Length: 542
Ligand code: SF4
Ligand code: SF3
Image 1: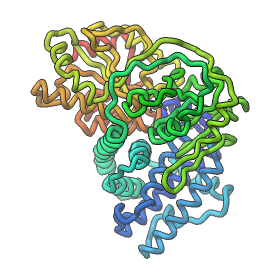
Image 2: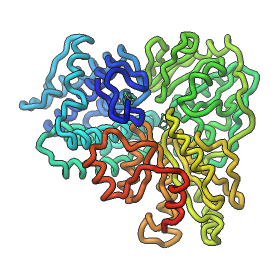
Image 3: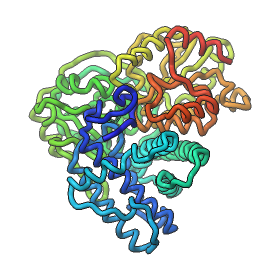
Image 4: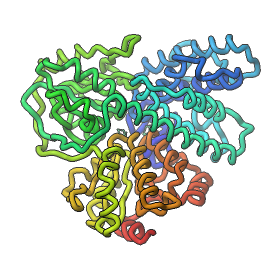
């Protein structure tokens, strides 16, 4: 195996024996083959001149296939094998339909069973591209597409789709097979990926807000009640809604964990009295927090930490793109309905959660809510009460070096405001950072996809202040990344013209020195440094 798609890649080079995330080499090779098969489908779609609008459910399967390979989403060999079989079947039908010859191996290869798949996967992975710059750009695009697939998949679950996005995804996946493309052409495709990333996030924003209302300022309870309960993690709001409906009047409470916290901000979920609040912190703390939670846990997406203890594994359920061997996976029926009764029955037999903290945290500052406060915000900027905003969106992770973000938030001057989204917020969302004239100093827009909200806010502020360029705003970007959704968020911000983004805690291992240089020279991307000197540097900007 060779994998370097996330921030925790071994030695910041790549995982070769087993993933730091816990992914086995078998799973890694199978995931590589799944991606390769999706590229093969894309080859047929592009060369056969098929359009996404005539492909129907193939689009959704392609999205789900990419999603499965995101870091910490799916560790289950058997489900990936099934997925490869399914995608090969689709690929072969499409190939017959278009009748094009001279196709890439990915569009024609045959495998016979799991062992054969693993072997094939070994030979079609990342290192198969020899030139390190081409490899770097191909992977940057592929990881961006994985993030884009995740966001589009959530939108599809809520009945919103956009064929143009899928059309682009086939084109971009196919392009990663094309040896005739120059590095410059691949750089251009990377930027186009960012443009479509903006579209995918806008689509999901529209899907979420048109279904569940606009997130609003909310005090989220972080304590517990004395009823048996289910903890929900991941990002899928449709799954969350279905579980809330099915647990109504059952005597079972519902709590969110990690990236599901922003579900608390949506008006549609507030009507459920048994939705108690958020339990615990970011994804990487889940093993201890699941232990004290006592009840079952539902993963709707990443991030799963391999549960070592059988007792915890028995309480974990997965659905959608997520999966873990030995954990029950809940499938949906053809109408997208999921039956969560097994989880609910298990919850009834288990103890209520053990309280690990009390009080509340405040969030819900997506674009609509912030714009309702626009007058206040603009006045605070004009009067100098707010000197600078810091976008600190992105992911959290296990590494000790991420203490940087807690210290950074803590040491920022009191006349600054942090705009956040994604699980990166858990590094500082419980610090007593106070407010500026009633505006909290940490404004949480929501999940990682709600980074889109932060871009909308920046664009609206640009209009209000009548500026030419988004970079003239008193906003600095100090973003934390971990998995591939952060890659599409980054590319989307670049596509929107945002410059001088600081990225940490390390730059991606998949950026070759030359590709990293392009990002530095064209966009001013820089790694984060030391807390105090970084704050000084940011505060002297503009
Ligand atoms: Fe390593 Fe990250 Fe890949 Fe897991 S996802 S194998 S930790 S690079
Ligand atoms: Fe977090 Fe996994 Fe990325 Fe959605 S839950 S931001 S890391």
